[in-house]
Length: 233
Image 1 (cartoon, rainbow, N blue to C red):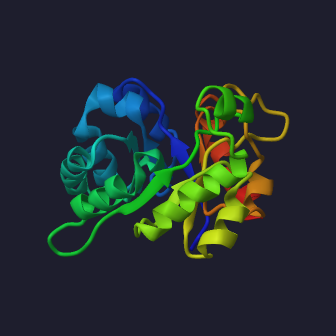
Image 2: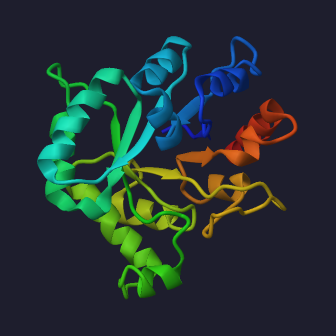
């Protein structure tokens, strides 16, 4: 699996999104993430427009509901031709299997389906005292990852600190998508479990997701290219 950098398009409007993407030369089409903010503001048409412009898309909506609701929602999302979609592994196995069924088109094709393990803004204290999970963070993430693998999902969203362990436990082909990536010396923001692109590239990460370090950089195109260089090693 080829490593790649995914840019989080965390903008509230179509206009800001297009203005950012127009900074890139015509032949340079980064892999992009459309999350809740942009999707809820602009709806499915923003996904269609990004695909028409030639971008691969990670549709990051983190579905988490009863199995039938998630199955029906995934069936709708499958028509948008995103390259990757996700859900919360905390929804458990029945929900994940239903999601996979709903996402698979009549011809058998589907986007990659990955499961969020624990958010990179969650630290060990919140895991224990607020979520009431006494298991160490790495073991909790690995348990979620194994459940996702058993359900036939393609991979997980995890922090870069757990990516290598997920690969060991679930196999090299099991995809790891890792937010919480910051350049050396950069502001961590609200992320707790973080790593640089260079270290992530050596730690079992298949895809890294970067938003503010790229989108809010003085030169976003150079920041993106720097991330690609460092991640590729």
